[in-house]
Image (cartoon, rainbow, N blue to C red):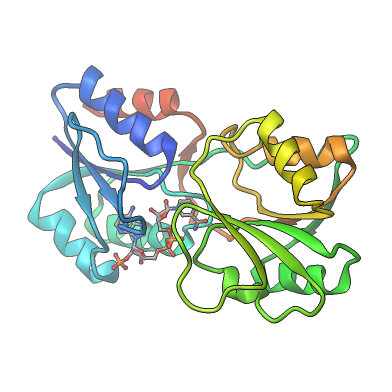
Length: 246
Ligand code: NAP
């Protein structure tokens, strides 16, 4: 049976690798959007790169290759592909599972302002007191923060952004990140506000911990709505789901 894993996350990569190793009766195909120039592909996992062409393109892809199962392991903020996958799988009657990390929860000592989306995050930065902002939302949407007066941004992303970039410095790096180095970055750049998506998971959590330790505010962007579906939070849970279907 063929299975399509929609990826772009560490969990998707781990799931694809584990499924290939543990479930040889499956033909595993990992799909990446192609956002980075050097995607981390693996010799053991067949990987395709690039969009499908909307819901219709995805339906054609699934039908032509006779895909029997879909696991959507994309990032919690990749709402469009998740909606497309839900519609395409439903149209063809293909079982679909979502592998989604649970969101981070604030704890004692955190100073979060929770906002619904990026525009609201930019408004929160504009209205807040922080002047030196650590912007950790990736590269695609940094333009939303361009033009905010009297704000300086340290922007972390895997590859340089295209288009308008807020005033500040770009830091090219790929996680996972650790507490010591996150504390050092915040201190070195005299950061007084952090902006983050509520991505969940351990790989990028250290900045939240570091902000807590330094008593910094965090503008925390809530996740977009995702389609209703059977959901697991771990790779092991997704492997169990696959086992129950092959
Ligand atoms: P998105 O807005 O939900 O999707 C935009 C379009 O990109 C989709 O309509 C689809 O194009 C294509 N696409 C997205 N994921 C794909 C995949 N796994 N395989 C093939 N095509 C895909 O997605 P996004 O927020 O731009 O994220 C793009 C990728 O980066 C995703 O794989 C996601 O897991 C990863 N990522 C995103 C974030 C984030 O904050 N958004 C963070 C870390 C990683 P077509 O309509 O042409 O099929």
